[in-house]
Length: 371
Ligand SMILES: Cc1cc2nc3c(=O)[nH]c(=O)nc-3n(C[C@H](O)[C@H](O)[C@H](O)COP(=O)(O)OP(=O)(O)OC[C@H]3O[C@@H](n4cnc5c(N)ncnc54)[C@H](O)[C@@H]3O)c2cc1C
Image (tube, rainbow, N blue to C red; front, side, top):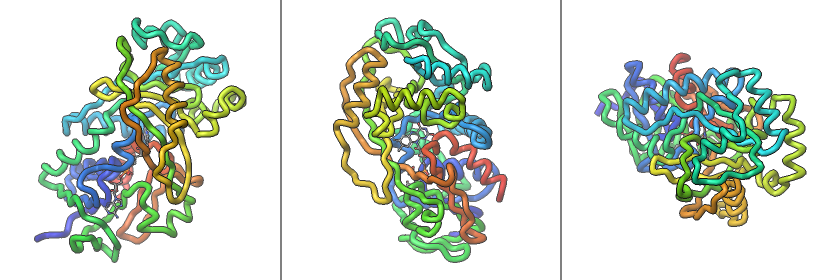
């Protein structure tokens, strides 16, 4: 058996698979090594929101490049992707001010909406929060289905001549150009480690250097209320408080103070109150943020209940939760993207800011450019 390829990618989450997609497009032979039998990490537990508009600087360029990659990969692999933008809901002047300030920088990429425009987008049969005074439309954001995007891409990649995926195969160590696994050794010219928040199991000194912790988020799913028509992801004031494009605006300080005064419980749980839709119309609801090296698996019911009640207030309809889960991603206080060559042959990559669905294909293109 020829075990040598141009590239080995460790981890078949969306970051690893996006790298495999980009590599095979460029004519390289690739082996993906995944310890599980299907993608089962952060990449299937998220909102599926490629939040292009809320990025800044180099990450904004990377996000736009990723957008192209998502659309190309979805077409090739036959996975579901909606190029429909995303909506921001403003219920206070402070929230609307920050949206207007970013609009002044970004122009049509972030359009300011009136209260009536926001309400119309939800559909005439629902009755959104009467406190809505306006909002924003982020034209270039994408929506993909987190439950199927990575698995579908993995299945498609497996059928490509230049790609092999070893499922159920755990990587334990590296020596020169060789990767040691639970099914023997494999060699490649370059090895890219994309194991998300489990990078500390392989390279603990590296994750200590970047102060990487696990960030856990509580999520839930509910059928959309009857008459709910909105196709876009929806973000609220607590979301505006979390993304750098907004936090750099002069109006952010007032919004931050207002959120602390009016919603201390949401701020305490690190809430980003947002929701989006799966292809079958169900709503993905979230989220909270907590940070630990070892993450307790236990869900706090009152956190999910509070998030769901806030979303229910925005929509103006009760929501009946049918699933609850915890998602975990890597988080660093030092960098939004951990990229380091630990040896001449081995590069580690982890999106350490909770935006791996947004950046994955742009990051993959940048990695392949640099090899
Ligand atoms: C609840 C939640 C909501 C989110 N919402 C969004 C969003 O809307 N937009 C956005 O841009 N981002 C979002 N994110 C972040 C995004 O999901 C992650 O950044 C992204 O999925 C990380 O992808 P990954 O491939 O690095 O990690 P993962 O998907 O976790 O994949 C890593 C893979 O590596 C494998 N692995 C680990 N160790 C080994 C080993 N030793 N040998 C072999 N295989 C190994 C694992 O089994 C796993 O399959 C969210 C995250 C969460 C948790």
